[in-house]
Each structure stands twice: as structure tokens, then as C-alpha cells.
Length: 319
Ligand code: GLU
Picture 1: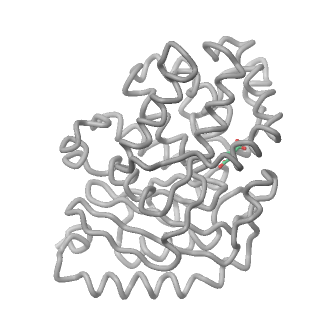
Picture 2: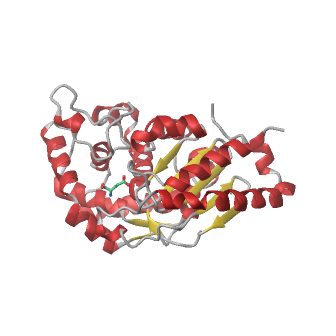
């Protein structure tokens, strides 16, 4: 029996739960090695010691361990949902005219690629500049319609109709987002943004400020992992789009630490500065982790350790 099949067997529930509890306990000490994000005032209130995980499989079983009922903002994990939406609505070739699909060893908020006259396209959709370009592709005749379309997509992806924007964090994002503003205007000057820059930025700040818990993240992961699950619910994304998005996550999902993380876990993942990491194991399992103590790149320190252990102990590596 392969390991994903093992994860899916009901009779192994107790063993899986015990292993998860053990992995969370073992890695809790790493929360001391990082710090919560402070560059956005609304994120400062997080508790550095929190650590939790949720696993959802295609048989609709749910495992949780640690701190699982806390809400936190999705931050950069939203970039995965927006990329999926853009690929579904515009197709790969058009999306590729706006962003590259190459890993970057610059930080998430780097302005380097678009600031440079030789390389004008953002390197990929997982860094801020790329995500802002992708946000300009949201369909709708008015700002309100675009926001409604965006939120509907997040609700479908998480199967959670109660998703809301945290207005405190959103206001914080807006008041500290000058670097993102600079990027957006540069993108516009190079022809990579369609539409009104202020509206696009506002939608970007809002998408980062959507409140989720680890189960919501695990559900996003399951959408990317399991085609049958997607089809059952009216095809949120196609098999090909899921494949492209998983590949982008693998190459670029953990900021400028993506290569090292891929090497250690073999899991396509996306992190956010709210402390979340979303992961999937094709074609069966979605995983959400929460640990707001971050390393200098913006990745959850203990969250990454948890995923390393999980991948090793259940042999989940995609390659
Ligand atoms: N809202 C964040 C920003 O644009 C996203 C950061 C992240 O999670 O990488 O600065």
C-alpha cells in the first residue's frame, strides 16, 4: 500500500491522530526561533507560541491538532486562489503576458524585476508584484462587482460561505502599503496592469486580509489536490490549472526559501506572513498549518518543521 493510500484508510485514524499530536508537540519549541510580522500593525497581535494543523482528505475525513480554531489573515496564500481564478478565466497564455513563471531569489516585496529595464515582467505570481498584476485580471464592470467575484471565488475554494475580510488588517495594509503602490504604478507604466491602479491595490489589500483558519487552508489544498472533489462541487478549477498552480507553488510558494523547503519536504506549498502554510498531496489530501512565528523570509518557522516531519514520516514527497 502506498503512503497516501495509508493516509486514506479509516482503520489508521488513531495512528494518524497520535502521529499528528506528536509532530505538533515536538516542533512547538521552534516557535521561539522566529517573530510575528510587525511591518503591518494589524499582524502584531498574533501569539508567537501558537501552532496548529488541519488535514482534510478526499474521503472528507478531517484531522486537527494544536491551535486550530483561531482565525488569522490569509496574506500571501491568497495569491494561489487569485492565480487559479485568472488561469480559469483568461487561460495560461494571456496570464503569461502579465507575469513570468520563474522562481525568484528576491524577497516577496522586491521591486527588482519590474524596476529593471531589461526584465520588466514580475518573475512569478507568488511575489507581490506578480500578484498585483494578477489582481488586475479579476473580471467585473465595477469595483463592487470585482470584489464580489473575488470573494465568491474564495468562498467556493474553501467551501466556507462565512469568509470575511478583517477590516483592521485591511486598513493596516492600506496605510502601510506604499511599496506595493510603487510596484503597481511601475507595472502600469510597463503595460502589465489593466485598469484603475487604486482599485486594483485595494482589491489586493482586501484579498490579503481575508480571515481563515487551518481548515479553510486545508480545503484550498484539497481543491488543488483532488480532481474528483473539485468536479463534485461544480469544477472550481480544471485539472490542468490545478497542475500549473501546484507547480508554481513548488517552485515559488515559500518566498526566497522555496528551493530549500521543496528539497526538505517535496510538498507544493504556499506561505503567508499571517503564519499560515497551505499544502497539498496529490491527489488526495489538503493541509493547513498555522504558526505566526516567522523567519526572516516570512515563513512560519515551526510550521515548516511540522511539514518536514509530516512529509518524512508519511512519505508524502511529490518527487
Ligand atoms: N499583505 C502582504 C503584503 O503585501 C502580503 C505579504 C505576504 O504574506 O507575503 O505586504
